[in-house]
Image (tube, rainbow over all chains, first blue to last red; front, side):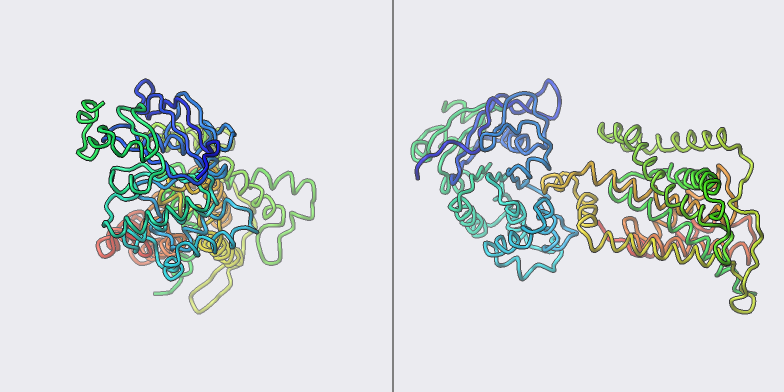
Length: 248
Length: 302
């Protein structure tokens, strides 16, 4: 795959819930269209906070976020979606009291009324199971089905970039495999995918490029092939900040 | 024994239902019990009274009573305008008082602040309009005999019809439209709603606008049936909460059913037991229903 200029560029981002105590402390990442970028790191490295801050859910103290060349730093979360940056939170990522169909229709409300039906049909084509479940309250879905619905909901707006916060958490290996297969399809359709993961092995298997964060800062980055043999990555399999720090 | 209490109860219950619909909306979307909601009822009624004067002066014929009703088109038009203004009053109160507290995560403080806002808004009405009762019309209406022993006035019949229309419209708005879907989404999970592209601040403003407008309608009803006093809404606030909880918090049809049950129970108590028990009965019914069904009649478990 030829590398284009990045569709998402995050420069020196500082973000956190409380002033003076940033959790993300100057992180820079980039993602191109049609590429899966995986963000790894031990617990507390600021991976989740990074994607939440990019999505507009955590206050940004400083730094810059550009999407397709346009500066979108500190836009409110609902405006980020409209700009083409979709986010799938780790937990509570579907509306359990709404039907599967209403979850998708809700996301489609941000689109022009003429596009809504066709976008829902396109997402149904990618996730055919959702058609059968459309009348069901999303709270009745299994964990794997919910995750599929959450991704489907994020795709409704035809985003340029799709960010996911640990989508494999709590899922069986088989379901993770299905989900990651979908992420590959989404990447191949030209979307830039940013994936935060604890599941290092599964994530490395689909990554095009990898970032490793430690204590809210960039630690390592590179193409998957270059990093696969890196001792810091090996240490991440064992987990823990100390192991990574020692390896670095 | 006559069945007059049923008619009286349905009418009082309609007033309560319109207020309870607003309470249930703001509670389900903001997880916040607004005790100043009664003041929206009083303010809505006084604003209607205030606006109906100039409309009547501008078009003298608008004062003429509509058919068998006690009021003219000037009051109807004033009520529609006042519904909008009361909605804006609710939006303003949220922007000035509740939103800053909510942003700091101080929900309990916001509930306490709503008590304060309630007293301030009520006192302001007493300063502006005095605490003497006022009336939309001083004409006496002749009650129509519906069945032996049951009499209602034309005003009461019209107001019950308006309540049914308003509650049905609100229910359709919430269950059939994109606005309703957004309201339900924000009620369940505001953070996810933002991620899904919903402008949550706008949805919250809409919630207050709807709640305020319905409170105004409730106030006008009460003003026409009983009288207009600065304390009229404050006296209704506990039955409102009883009705909203009884029907199931978050459910608009529930608020209607809860309102009618509370209204009928109160009227039955006045007729059969004694008026000193009136205030207590809403809560006895509430306790009874919650023991059997903790989520309320139409409420859903969270």
